[in-house]
Image (cartoon, rainbow, N blue to C red; front, side, top):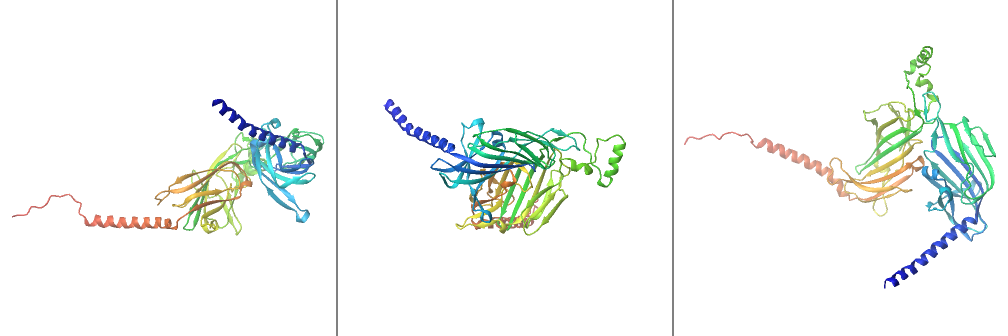
Length: 495
C-alpha cells in the first residue's frame, strides 16, 4: 500500500514539474526573442529624491506573441525603490496618449548579479515583428550619499550618486543613452565611460550600441546638492470621522535632516545685527564663527517646510512637545491650502524635530455614499510635506462608533489591520482601520477609499448619553437636597 501511495504521489508531481519546466523554457525563449531597439534613461537628481524616467522601444522579432516586458533593477536600486509606474504611448504628436500599465515583481533567483525583475503587462500581446514603446518612472530614496559625511555650517554639501553608464536589462539593447541631471554645474568628479560628455548641469553617457543582456558599467557622480534632506522617520496620521459634519486630521511627525552631519559650533544672531556681528567676529580673529542669517545660502540646513493641505481647512494648529508654535503661515484658496511651518530652530544634518499638525475639514467634501448604501471616505494617502521621504507611515482611519465591516481600497500595496479607539462619550469604542507603508514619496499622494457600514441610529448614542448624564445629575442633586443624611440622636418624648 505504501509503495503504491508513493508512486501515485510521484506520478502526480511529474505533470507539475513538466508544466513548470515548459513555462521556464517559454520565458527564456521569449526573452531571447525580444530586443530593445532604443533606450533612454534620464536621472533627475535636482532634489534629495532620485527620479528616473526610462523609455524603451521594444521589438518582438521571433516569438509568436509577447504579453509582457521585463524591467531589471540592481540589488541597491531594489532596496531603495519606492514606486514604479509604467505606461505605453498610443497615437502621435497632438493625439498622443499615455495608457497606464500594471506592474508586478517577478521571482528571478537566476538573474545575474542578484538583479530584481519587474513585469509590465502590455494592453495587448506584442505580435511577431511588431514594436511598442514603454515608458517607466521609478523613484529611489536614500540613494544620495553625503561625502564628506560631516560639514561645518558654512560648507556646501557634496553627495555621491552611484549608477550604471549602461541600462540594466534582460534584453539586448541596440542603442542606449543615459542622462544624469544635477542641481547645478558644480560637479566635483564623475566616472568616464566613453563616450561621455558634460554640458551645464547634465552628464551624458553614450550612445552605446549592441550591449548584451545584463550589461553593467558602474559610475559615480560627486556633486553639490544643498537641498534640505528632509526625512520623516515616522509619521502617524489620524483621520477621525464624525457624522455630525467634521473630519479631524492629526499628523504626528518625527523629522530628521538626513544630509551630511553638522560639525562645529552653530552661530545665529539677530538679523539686524548679523552683519556687524560677522565683521566683529572676523576682526576679532574668530573667522570660523559665521552668522547663520548671512551664510544660510551655503548651508544645506532648512528652517521652513511647506505642507499642501486640502481646501477649506479650519482650526489649524501646529505644536511640538513644548507647546504651540506660532511661526507658521496659512494661505487658503478654492483649490488648495498652503501651510508654511517653521520649527523652533533650523535643522542641520543629523538634527531632529518632533511636532504635530492638526486641522479640521468639512465632512461633505470627503465622505460619500456608494450605490450599495455603504459610506466611504475618499482622502489622500501620503505625506503633505513637499519633497519629503517618509520611512514609516501609519494612517489610522477612526470610524464613528457603531461602524462595521471596514475595507480599504488603496492603489498600491499596504499592510492593514483593525484596532479599537476610545474617545469621550464612547460606549463600545470606535473601529479603527490602520494602514501601514514604508518608503513613501510624494508620488504616493493618491486618493484612497475606506468603505464601511453604519446604522444612523448610533448617531443618537452621544446625545442620549448627554441627556442621561444631565438627568442623573439633577436626580442626584434633588435627592441630596431632600434627604437628611446627618447623624444625630433622636429626641426623647415625655410620656
